[in-house]
Structures are given as C-alpha cells and as structure tokens.
Length: 394
Image 1 (cartoon, rainbow, N blue to C red):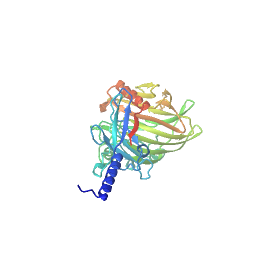
Image 2 (image 1 turned 180 degrees about the vertical axis):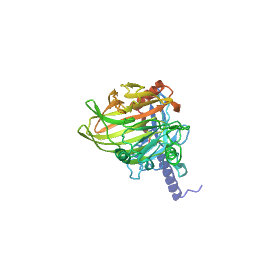
Image 3 (image 1 turned 135 degrees about the vertical axis):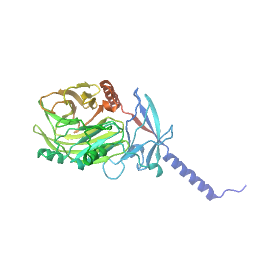
Image 4 (image 1 turned 120 degrees about the vertical axis):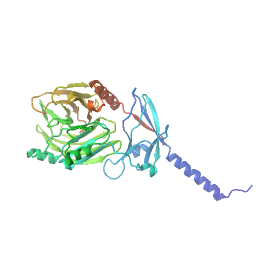
C-alpha cells in the first residue's frame, strides 16, 4: 500500500481544523427559561454582541432547535452610529419550561427584508405630530409647531404633552393611510370605515401616559416635545427619542427627555424617562366624561380606567414595577381636561420606566373590564419575572 504524501495529511488536518472552527462558530446556543405558570409570547429578547461573544451582529440569525425554523429577528442601532447594537426576537415558551435556540450566521438570501409592523415617524404634513403603532394600537404626540400655532390662536395648533390614542381594529399599519386620507381625500380618520378611528380626546389632559408633577394639590405639565429622533422600526419594535423643552413646576426647573418603544403584540408602549429637577412624577390617564371606573392593584403596580366610549368601551392603563410605584390618585376637578387618574412614580437616579396603553372593546381584543384587568395582571407578572436568557454553548 502506498504511503499518503505528507502534504495530503497536512491538508487533511487543516480542513478538519477549519471545519471544527466553523462548527464551533455556528453552534452557539441560548436557553430561555420561563418560571411562570403561564405561556410566554410577544415578549422581546434583546441579544448583544457582548452577551453572544461575537464581534458583529449584522448577520446574526436565530434558529429554533426543535423546528429548525429561522425566527423573525430585528437588528437595532440604538445610538445612530451605523453599527448594530442588539438583535431582537420573540420566543414562545410554554408555562414553567425552557427552550433552546441556535445562533447562526445568515446567508444573503436569508437576510431578506421582513414586514414593518411596528412603525413610527415624524409627520410634517400634519403640523409636526410624532405617531407610532404596532399590530394592536397606535398613538401620537405633538411638536413645537403645533404648540406655537395653538399659542397664536391659529387653526391646526395643539398645546399638549398628553398622549393621543388612535383606536385601530386591524393588524396592518394605518398611520400613513389615515394621515393621507385626512390630507388628500374628503374622508377623515375621525370616522370609522372598518379600520378604526381617532375619537379619543386629549386636550390638556394626560391622555394615555403623559406625565405631570404634583405640588401641593396642583399638577404641573410640560408643553409639547421640541426634538425627535427615530431609533428603529421593523417587525418586532419601533422606538424613538423625544426631547422636552425645560419647563417649570411651581418654581422647580424640570429637564426631561424620553425614549418610547412599542413591541409587536403589546397594547402598552414603554416610556423610559430621563428627568432632572424632581424626585417623583405622575403618569396620567384622562378621565374624559368621568363616567368610567378607576381601579388599581398596588402590589402589581398598575392603574386602570375602564370607560364607556361612544358606541363601545375602552380601557387605559399605566403599568410599572414596584420599585417605581408609590401610590395612585383619582384627581377629579371641575376644569375641563384636568381630571386624570394618576400613578405616582419614584425617580431613581434621574430615571423612570413605565408602560402605558389601551384596549378597545370594538377591536375585539378585550370585551370586558375583567378581561382587560387580567391582561394587566399577566403583563405585570411578566414584567416582574422576566424570561431568563443564558448562553449555554459558545
């Protein structure tokens, strides 16, 4: 038998070594554990390069180890430096169980664009709104031009730092369609033609999650946002930055900015405030005609308002964690738009985090007050007991 040449053996060793390296590179695995007695889905897992021990997240994919299906992911550049800072995905984990996912490198074909369901943008054609939505809900806030028009008494102005709710009942995006309908046709988004409508009055109220600062028996508000920056849109999350002009709360100078995000499948937007000049804030829910019911669970750190709303019913809510939650108040006064249900929240190291949103009966998502409150209970449980994510094979 002929002896194999030395170069053949060396080549074989090199190939085996390279294959081992490739195999090791492509067999990173994460384990996600759910310790609650409820199924978990529509919860977003954030994966960073440091956590995964990789140099570049740009081509990272996630594969279900059981089904071998690639998961929907979203790459996010959080700071605008054109470098991916995290990859998002939403696992589905049964009650009191765990599941593993492979971290893989995607080919060019596998990096196909996904549908943008979680969307937000600045809206210059409607003064200067900033609007955002996912497959369940939609919202907007108002900018400096709207503020100036209102102060000058010009039509089209809005002076409010409250959060407006757009009551949608379809899962596809409606923001661009509704604004175009209002501007370019004889129709209006104030009428429901099958997709929902904007019939939610904000005025100077807090709407769904706008903030205030209480001094003695008076609540003080900021004016409209002054600067904006879109951070991300995609299949899993939209998020954006809003800066508020310095404002006065009974002699205290308040500096405020916030990052607002909304994930796929959630009825609640996340508000991450950076604020200076106060040790606590109040996040509010407008009481509108005062014909609804304010309820709360202080242990689960939520406040809700369920109300009749035109030909339907509507639930709005604030949810946070016990480390931020102080107490709540139903603030009922004669002045128009000033009656709100407030969650009083601690400011910790100039930060506050809470969630605010709504459920509209006509959308079919929540048909009773009890169903809405069960959603809030489950949301709180998930918030207080996050999914555990670990790197088990690297």
